[in-house]
Image (cartoon, rainbow, N blue to C red; front, side, top):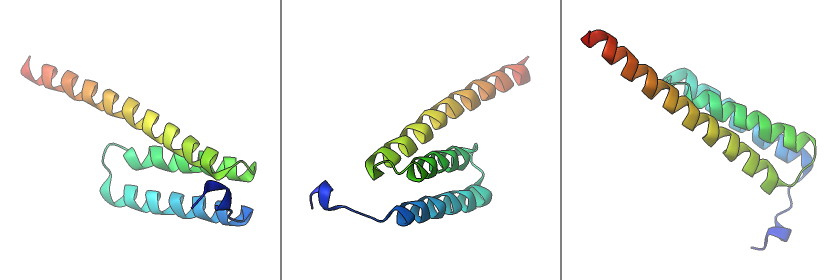
Length: 92
């Protein structure tokens, strides 16, 4: 399938991002693993905003992935540093 053939209606893009956001929020509410789902929900909101601007779906997907991955990495580094500081304080 060629990407030019991949044409989905504008409203379908919005629906896709609303479903992604809902699923990620539900998963985050049940798992609660270092707020990872929160960053993917924010990435979904970015994808939704790009859909509202009627940008190409590939741009929406890249925006979603970049925001989600970057914030997840920052989050993991923060919790890793926080856990190391907590462990050092317990040993003292």
